[in-house]
Amino acid sequence: MKQRTDSILQTEKKCFITGSYNVCLHHCICGTANRKKCDEWGLWVWLNPEVHHALHTVKPSLRYALQRKAQEAFEKLYGHEKFMEVFHKNYL
Image (tube, rainbow, N blue to C red; front, side, top):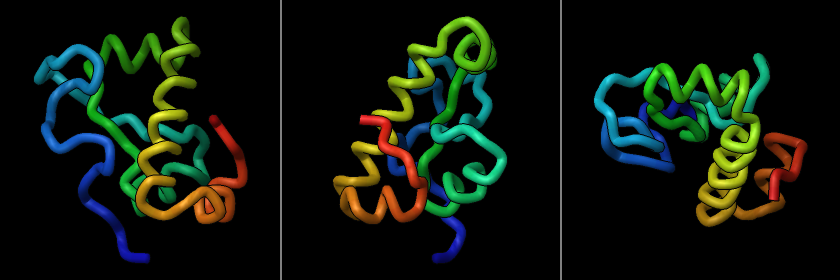
């Protein structure tokens, strides 16, 4: 599959959580090997830097919520079996 440049979760370049326009990119499925897969399948969102930092440090529940949303969006387009084939983990 070719590299995606768009997210399947959002269309505007603003924070997925707060709506702020001060943003950085967040890959929804964590791990070095998964970053490339997230880029390829469009499983990323824009986040405010403070939200992004909190998500990786003090707000794991937000990270898990984004993982679930990413899986739901992926499965709506490609199905559960394909998600499991690509990411090997169920977040739902």
